[in-house]
Length: 104
Image 1: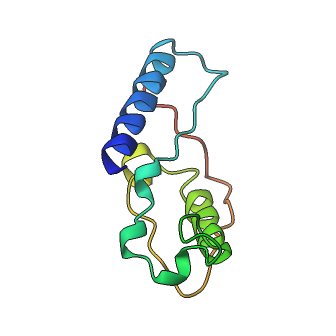
Image 2 (image 1 turned 90 degrees about the horizontal axis):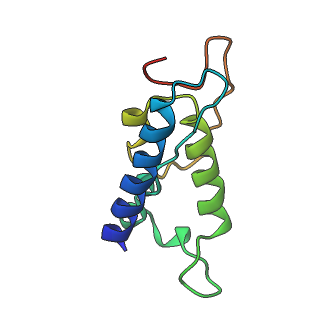
């Protein structure tokens, strides 16, 4: 699964590079890497007690916050693992936050 996730991320990044090459100031692609989900280091509470496969509601909340908090970051920063914190922290967007469009 890790190998497939990495391949998927690379395919999406290639699409982003192609769109960015068009240099269209009215269009942007926002990428949130699936490889940022560090499930191997999450506690057992991260897995659903219904089927032991899907994320639990606790995991959904933390992942949603993790992806949201990375929304405005550059590609390299988005790839950092989303850690399991005891409390969910959602970052409010600030005036200077913008979607990063490289080379425009």
